[in-house]
Length: 92
Image (cartoon, rainbow, N blue to C red; front, side, top):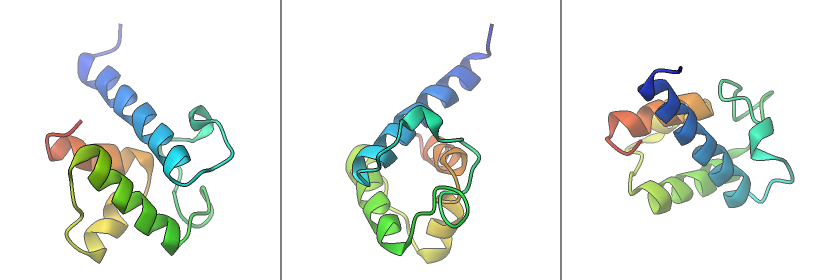
């Protein structure tokens, strides 16, 4: 049986994948997103406009704001880094 915090992480990552697909109106199954794949560049191929939309979705869905560009770049690296950020903020 999986450890509870690992199961919780998986649930949060699944929720984030769904949020990304819905917020950006992507034509893909959220389950097909690799939690460790880059969101930008060679991963999902998102761009700076997508980043802004994701930041708005994070604030709307979790009540958490990203403080600056460098934090945003670190947090939005992958679904996993976003989930870890939200857990650190007590939102996951």
